[in-house]
Image 1 (cartoon, rainbow, N blue to C red):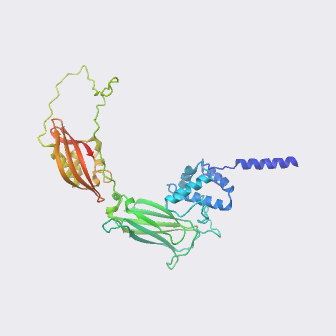
Image 2 (cartoon, rainbow, N blue to C red):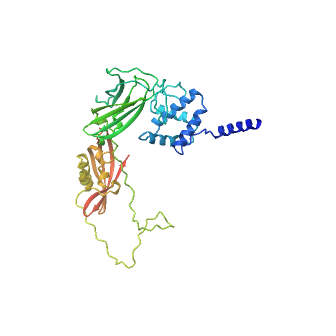
Length: 399
């Protein structure tokens, strides 16, 4: 009998020793098993807060589509972490997303289970009885001209008569999706803990201007209760086009010297100008004298700036031979290239230096982008002689 008792105690010790105290995200099965092990060692209140923390991280701490992918992403995020580390991480995510939750506060999100057990329980605060979802939108902010800079989007769960239903202590997942012309532009999530939910503050500066058609967006809000997911959309909401996100036009400094790939660098004098090897069997010929341009190089710069201002970007690109600007598509990109320029106001253009092969031109001008922001620039344009025509070959912005 003593031997049997000893073996029983030993088996219990071995079982306890096998329990994991950290997350094992090798696969979904080991993830769930390790989390169950970690949960079983906690007090009842700590178990609830730990489950809430996992829910916060799965919902707001990772970027993925669908429960399965969210679970995989969560596993990668918390792999190897222990309970205190997971609670701390959840606090950081909640604070970053403006969620009123803390690992040290009392349980507040109802019954949370990241593995998808959505069966209603007697005390399930997320089993909110409602008939539908309503949305109220209102412009907020001021860009200085009286135009808004954002939209406040407030969803409410309502009964059959359209009256808001009363609930508290829930942790309903609320999701906002933003579209324009059928293309999804943004997604945001938050927790709806009661029907006084503040909703979403959609800043126009977070929406790319290049993807908004006719200065209008569509929105869809969904709220997930235990038994049902409610959805509501609003179509054709006006946005302030001047406040939309427009990347700053690139400031290119092309001072690097293009080097012949066949050039040879002297290892004893690496700072010396590389030399290009010559073919001993080649016939030596005198280089032809380049055709001297007759026009002033500043005319090319003036033409370039004028075409950029009028958004005749093909003509502007044709006045250049600058490898740093890349292809025409890159040069004219509406978000990262000269396509983002609305207007150029030239103050001064002067020719700095000129010879048969090249020239230097200084220009001072103001650039206004499509977001209405104006920047004053002092630029030195380098030009080279291409068959008797001046072409812009470098572009340096001076302090």
